[in-house]
Amino acid sequence: MAAAQQLPGPQDLSDEQREAVETLLFTLADDEFVIAERYTEWQVRAPTIESDIAVANIAQDELGHARLWYDLLEDFGYEEPDLIWERDAGDWRHSTLCELPFDEGDWADLVVRSYLYDEAEFVRLKALEDSSYPRLRDRVEKVLSEERYHREHARSWLERLCEDDDTRTRMQDAVDRLLPYALTLFSPTDDEMEERIDELGLRTENLLSMREAWLDEVVSAFESVGLHVEEAQLPEQYDVHHADFDLPDETGRDQSHTDAWFDLFDEFTKSYRELGRHSAMKIMKDPDDE
Image (cartoon, rainbow, N blue to C red; front, side):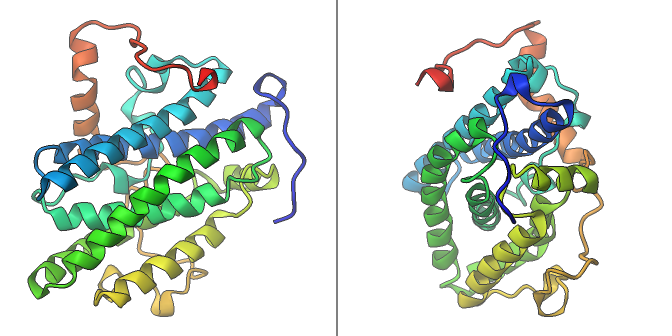
């Protein structure tokens, strides 16, 4: 994609520019926040103390990344309750991969999910390194540096669990179940908006090319450890230019969600509602002040 003209600061964006920036930021922030909420379910339940601590740290990182992106949305007049606690559950734009409950608390589910997500996040972040929107571009390197650790953790467990026939079978079951949902990480919010995001240079790769790079990586990694993707109903030869992926009915990006999402939303907003909150306590510095 050709280099785009640098965009101005938040107060000088046109309405169309602002809408595109907001849409991209919501997808980034919502993914990070929701998958972190799911990761927290593994605290004190992971198979080893080390993995317990690792998942807790990863969840904390993802919440921090969500905060970086939500903070940029506050440039446009939003406040934290608008973005999280008092926002309608049907307005969220995260991929449905992030909201799915874990399959009977299976560690293989966590490993496959985190691997699929972290590889996708890496590809998406690399496409933001030269974003035309400076406020977004300036935060990418911090997020990338932490995502590199997340990828290493997921890949290590992927290889470890596939060394044994029994656990490899559980890993294959997780791949079959989760890969179609992982494809929704590259689903459009709507085609017109995605075209605008690309034309403005907010990212340097479009959804199709990012999905291609991601599939090349994950399919190769799965096959290297004895896992296969045919059962996940990908097109023959993994042709990412094929238009007929068997995506789930709910992709998240278009604000369609599974029932599990509404249960999760009620759970993490319960204390806020029951305590009658109308604002959120600030326990971290503003990222711009760090």
